[in-house]
Length: 83
Image 1 (spheres, rainbow, N blue to C red):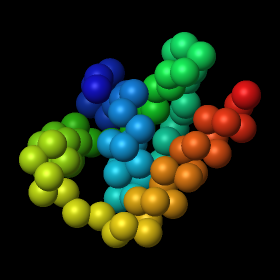
Image 2 (image 1 turned 180 degrees about the vertical axis):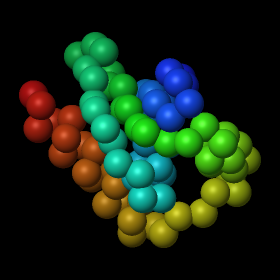
Image 3 (image 1 turned 30 degrees about the vertical axis):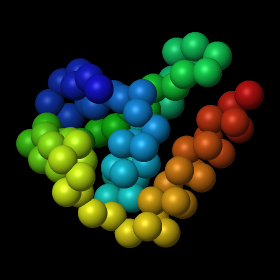
């Protein structure tokens, strides 16, 4: 995971990206970095990001299961729609 500037965040972690989408954030761009690897770019406040990331890795971040599932489907649609 990489923070470009205060609000631009990039990650290759599909599940963290899906979690951010489930929390209401939108992917601002999707970059193919290899045939099987993508980078998801978000615009998110660094303080919020740190909180989400910390809670995500500590298994304390809660999102609605259906929304999370739909977020994964949305990402896969965007990935495979580029092929």
